[in-house]
Amino acid sequence: MSQNANGILGISAKRTGLLREMGLLGLAATGICSMLGAGINVIPFMIQRNVPGIGPYVLPAYLFAAVPAILAALAYAILASAMPRAGGSYVYASRALNPYLGFVASFSQWFGLCIAIGVVSYVLIPFLRDIAAALDLKVIADALDTGAIRVTLAMAFLWTFVFVNLRGVRLYEKILIPLMFLMFALGAVVIVAGFSFGHNDFAASLLQQDGQTIPVSGPVPFRLPLYFAASALLFASFIGFDSIAQAGGEARNPGRSLPLAIAIAVITVGTFYILFTGSVYNAVPWAYIAEEGMTRDLTAPGLLGYLLPTGWTVAIVAGAAVALINDLPAMLLAVSRLMFAWGEDGIFPRRVASVHPKRHTPHVAIILSGILASAGILGNYLANDFFLGVDILVISMLVNFLLMCLSVLVFPHRNPDLAKCVRVVTSRKAQVVLAFLGVVALGGFLVIHVWKDLTTSLRAWYFHSTPIYLIVMAVASAIYVREVRRLRRGGVDVKTLFSKLPPE
Image (cartoon, rainbow, N blue to C red; front, side, top):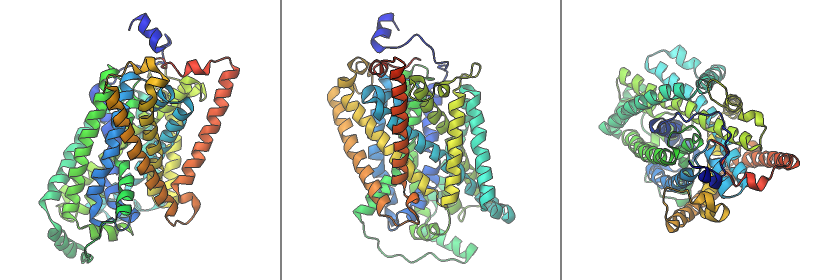
């Protein structure tokens, strides 16, 4: 890049310490592995508990949930092509929309994803329980259902991948990419098995093994409010492609590779979701899933275990466990780069932006994110329902994605020099149409999700995601006001700071 171009973009000669080592496959794997996991193996089935009455309409709700996700992905791709830096969503909104909204959007994302990491770590253990049960290791299976063991193992998995992230991008890619291909291979077994059996096969196997019969269910009316509520929750399954944007400071050829990786992740995962969920509901009656989901946590491989030999059951449950495990390093990378970007701009303690001199990782940010994710594990245990964490994630990411679409709308007016660098969907008319549709769709999902949360009867107010989210946003606002005041007292031109890209 020429000196003149550097001046236009406001890029400092200062270096962050991060290295551009991540290739297209590593970026795509980051998005794919952040999306696949609980989103495909648990939520489409446990949603029968969280949205009672959705019945046979889960798959159509999934398809509808993909619409705002695709619009949000396009907004991310547009912004990523012009501003390829670590902490993507924070940089995008702070430079294209408003620095306060950029911080609130990314703090919301950071909090929601850290809680999600805790959720994933926590729901991973039932998959190990199902493996033990399939191998007739009843004592181990029962032990894995006890609170103390479940929490301890969840913490162990979480901090193992905190260590992987601390070691650097090369080790991260060496572990994540092979596990991604293994996940797809074992997931393909689920798809083939699910479409190879029908409801009658499942009913016969259930009667033979457990002496149970399938609950009788009549026609279920289609109710639009339930359909929208389910779609808003299933939207969480498409969250994760944003992790690609957070790695913008470590991507090779980022202007091209970031948007391309986002497209690969969304298309690949969307196709896999539909096939996977459709195959399980093809084999297992929804009425059984709805009834069993009220009393225990269900997993897709655990359900298909009634139809498959022990060896295949163990293999597909292990594949589901791999999918959940893959979530951890990918999401830890994303949340730590958000904190890193805040520290670089000085709106968070600068210590958070420290980069290890040998491993080139933001080690302080990674450890702090691991600590909050650990709190998420404990929160899920105390609430005795991991859907609280999912609800917090959904509201956080809906706000974040909504602000990304708004960023696309105002980008040329707020920061015309940077807006000229957009390489994806370069037509301004197309940008406006896509961003407007995204605002409408995501805003509608946000209203539906908040309404459902506030009208649901729960044991205490703190089991509702909306007030928890608002408390977190109040904390974020207080941090922002304090740090911006400190910057101004130090003589920093805040307006100029937020008009430039951070250093590479």
